[in-house]
Structures are given as C-alpha cells and as structure tokens.
Image (cartoon, rainbow, N blue to C red; front, side, top):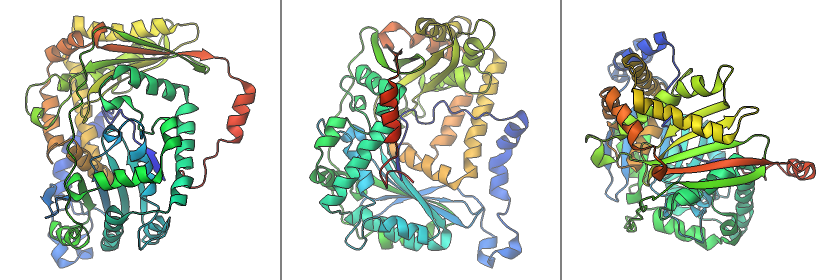
Length: 495
C-alpha cells in the first residue's frame, strides 16, 4: 500500500515520442484550454461555459495550510494529495526510517476509524489510494469520483489531525517495513550498493541515510518514536493540500476550510542547515554481493536549482539538457556508443540528474558490462562520452531534438490529473512557484550548445566523483532458496 520514491526524481525522463506526437503535444496547451470535455448539452448550464482547463491557484488557510487547486474538467474525477514537507532528511541518527514508518502508521486509525478502516472507506467511495516517502517529503493521495470529494477530504483531514494507533499495530507494521527493506534493498545487490554509495558520497548531508532506514534503527524503533515525529512535523504550516480535477476554486476553498480549517496552528520546527563540505578527491567503493553481473555507478557533485535561482543564470539547465543528450530518448548517445555494434562494452547504460531537491544533487552515469568486458572499461566509456561533448560540443539538430522532446513530455503530463497534482505538490515542497514548469521550459529552450559543452567540461572531474562498483560473488543456492520461500511480504505491506 505504501512505497518509497526513487531519489532520482524525474530528471532523466525526457519522453520518447514520435515526431508526429511531438508536434501534436506542442499544440496541446492551446487545444486543452479550448476543447470541451463533453458535449455542451450533457453539462449543466453553469458548467458548459467554464474552461476545460484553468491555471492552478493557491491560497492559505488561517492555520497555515497551503491549498493548491488545479481545475481540469475533462473527466468527472478528482485527485486529493496531501504533501508534508518532511522526509528522511529530517530524521536524526538512531531513528532513520521513521518518516517512512509513520507513513505506514497513518493508515492505522484515528479516534473515529479502526486500523485499516481508512482504506476500506476510500474503496467504498469508488476511489484508489496510495502514499510515498522520499528524502524531501511524504505524500498521501486518492483519486475518487468528484461528487465524493467532500467525504474524501473529511477522511484525510481526520488522519492528518488525529492519527493514532495501538502499540500492537506498530509492532506488526514495523515487521512489514523490515521485510520491505529486505526485499527492496538487502536482497537487491544494486540497491544495497546504491545505499552504501550514498553514505560514501555525502558526509554531512542527511541524504547519506537511506529513506527506508538502517535495519538496526528499525529493530530499535518504538511506537513513541513515530508518535513524536508525527507531533513534530505534521502541522498545517508544514503541509500542502493539492486538489486537481473537475472542481472549482471556490468549491475547494469552502471544503478545505470546512475540513482542514479547524486543525490548530502550530509552529514548524526550525531546520538547521547541514551543508555538505567540498569534496577533495575521487571516492571509490568496491562492493561485493551475490550477483550475476557487475554494475558500475558514477555520481558527480553538481549544481541544482531552487526558488531563488529559477530565473537566474545557472548551469543546472545545461546539465539537464546534457542528461537528456546522453540518455533521454531511444538511440541517445550512451545507448549508441556503449551498447551497440561489435565493439560494445555494456549491456545497458544510463544517465540521470537531480535538478531540484532540499539537499545537494548529483549527476549519475551507470552501466552493466557486456560479456567479456570489465567494469573499468564501462567506467572509462561512460566518462568518455561526457568528455567527447566537452571537447566537440553538440550539433544544433541534436540539441533541438532533445528540447522538443522535453517540451512534449511536459505537455503530455496534462493528460493525467494525478500527474498534475504530483507536479504541483512536488514544486511546493521545493519552494517553487505554481508556474515553475512553464518557466523551466523557457529556460531549457534557451540553453545553447556552448553552455552544454561548458558544463560537460566543468563538473565531471575526479574531485566531484564517487565511483561504486558491484563485484559479483557466487550465489549460494541454499540461501537463494531460503529467500524465495520467505519472499512473500506480510499482509499489508503493499497493495
């Protein structure tokens, strides 16, 4: 029922679209604002004249809760997302994983709901639900028929204000989280290596800790640890309610005031800066684990954007374009150079970049060596592709293709009210404005070949680099069989 968000966000996700699809996507915003969601005769008179899609609006309740409304009337549905600006980066040593554990416990009852009753009520309303935890945030979301929005908001507001659970429920659920860690991290060599690579890459930043938590901390965690985290961070001024779908701003304002407005205001705890010190030399991790193939992961310390830099000159936009040039579409540079032809060195290769985040961000290159090739060869080949751009630059046609596909991917997001709500909430967590996506697109359109060449030369030296290499070890058949027998997660782990 719950899941962890990948720390890679959306940065390498340039859509793989056809040329025709791209052309249609570029026209989509104007068409979206004009075309009716249904024949006029099927709509009430008052609704027939309303635009199908309107820009989002934001306001704040007296208790500090931010409310963001995205009208999109193409279907009679609504999405509610409650975002809390708290994640694993807000934890302290000894209770790592508590943000994610609390996400699980939020389904375990309130004074008026028994454990598990929240999910049963959502299903009875004809809705679907889930939740997630990342380094930066925790989110809860439901999609329901729009006429059930009032009831759905009442349920979410109740657990945000009054979540509680018996100790026995916590003891059962902590076992679910521990099993989740075993399945998603400890039984996955690449995930386990990535966890340790983060711990090597970051020294002061809380990003060095895993979102799911260290197993020793999960084993020692108490119900009171989760309750204290809830009391500390789940306050209206540290949260945003995002409603997207077939709604009106005035309607949502009234419902938000009705259900969330009475929650008492409390101060958000002061966050102290945890600046990452300058890296002074390459770092390496050799990681051994039972696996069939080697794996190489290179991460570089690079700039990012925040609300103050959104309109300022920054290398982040060129880094984003660079990631797309390397691995943003079928046939991009890494795939062509490393995985194709008789001299190929890798079975797969990828690139990603963390554009935004409450903590420091990275640019990553990964590869799986082909049969007979070494991890060192893949590492060298990955770096060589960045070096080639640093030396030769990028042609205008290739640059234009990447930009066009990025604009298309951003436009296609509007096909989903859930994607719109997710984007608006994520931007709020990062302190970005409602029109951040449009401004990002304009920044990307303005990136030049010279800027991409410059960042490729500036940020990919040894002093910014941490390399992790997975060295396969023999798989113990008895251990593998034992894991397979116990692989099924306890009830309630996932939907």
